[in-house]
Image 1: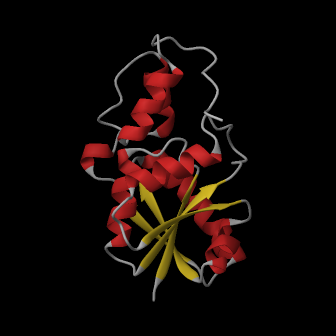
Image 2: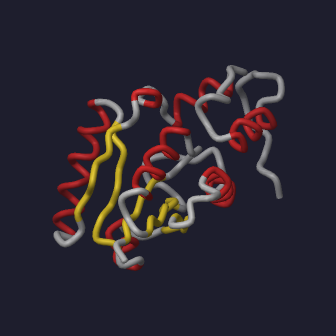
Image 3: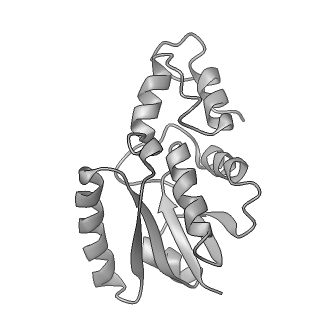
Length: 171
């Protein structure tokens, strides 16, 4: 069985992420979606539990996809799942610059783990988690950009469509 991982913070998962994961699921026998518990480069809006729940709901029906949380090097996470491939989506040139750098670092750490880049579908090439969060915080509609559960949660966080301190996550 050939396993790949799709690592990310998924804060929140977008329809672009779901598209990349589903396409990876068509290539590999098993896909493990790795949710970074506490990303080093940014503070998350959603808890890790919410991010996992959003992914599980959005990927329901994808029998060969599982979601797991990790807090170690991505190459160690890949090895834990016996994955020799990481799948990453690319939207724009700035994604390439970041991923190029990360690829070389990961290859230094684990030359046996390859990264496969999947180009974003044109429909989602402009969609980013940070852009979606900003639109939602100002009351803009994000229903076409994110899975249903994410859009509903944004309506709970920003009921008046005004940015500010979001409502805390469900306990």
